[in-house]
Amino acid sequence: IRFLIRDLTLAFKSRDPAGVIQVFQEVLAPIPYDDYVAATRKTFESLYKVDYGEFLYRAVLLSFLDLIGLTPKAEVHSSRGRSDLEFTTNEGQVWVMELKICRKDGEDESLAEAALNQIIAKGYGDRHKNPVLLGVAINDNERAITAWRVKGLSTPNAR
Image 1 (spheres, rainbow, N blue to C red):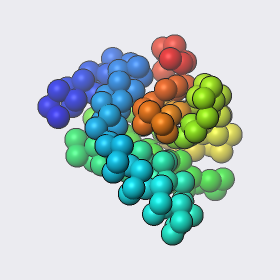
Image 2 (image 1 turned 60 degrees about the vertical axis):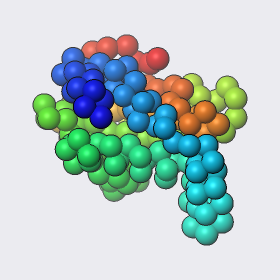
Image 3 (image 1 turned 90 degrees about the horizontal axis):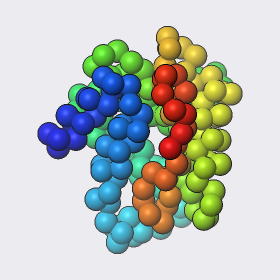
Image 4 (image 1 turned 180 degrees about the vertical axis):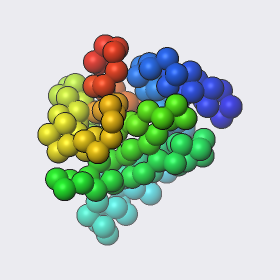
């Protein structure tokens, strides 16, 4: 975990969203297929009527960010909705994230764009000064981030 913390810290300091996404990829990668299917799909869909994938990925990222001391917040409410995840880096930069789960081939790019547009349209970052807005598409079959869009950094908007 020491290397993940180092890599994430460097990505934040250099304002490198691709580096942030790479660390998040490494955090999500160990989710075992059997645990994922058994523990989430059946339980959350049938009992709680919750999008099982988004819940799981948000919980994993939230736990990781909390573990490294960034004090993340999930489901942050505003007057027009709620963001999936928000956290502040050690440098004081606020990141606002929206996750979208891809369940069909080829929808990754459009869902990443939709996630970023939702953050903007619903004003999730409006209460912060110069936040980084990050829309993320996670492919449910691969359990990996397959597309993302960012606004608020002087770097390319997508990968």
